[in-house]
Image 1 (tube, rainbow, N blue to C red):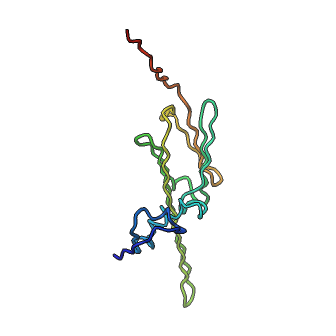
Image 2 (cartoon, one colour):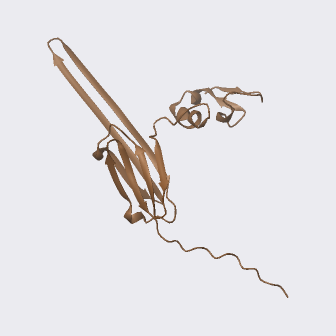
Length: 156
């Protein structure tokens, strides 16, 4: 592993480097590109994560996740420790043999997304639907006990 000392000056990707030393191997590692580069204002969107819309109404939340090209069976949705975890994985293989040649194609597509659920969601009543490339959820709200405001005690 090679480390390079940076001088404190205006760097185009300064928010990507959290210390005075920069790990060159990590720079070219996919994990770095997935986390650091994509949170920079210079880059648009997030690699590998589908677009997400969240709409709040008086009695529920609506979540829409753009995931075209998948089938309903490709998704796994779980609720764990207050998180709505959404993942999907799809593989495709195609092979064509003719006379003296073989054509073989394959593709792989996957993503994971986790959303922290608010306290006022009825987790047992979350409904999901996949239609025309959009995975949508309806999360019903419940009444949450409001915390009492602090009461001032007079000292005599």
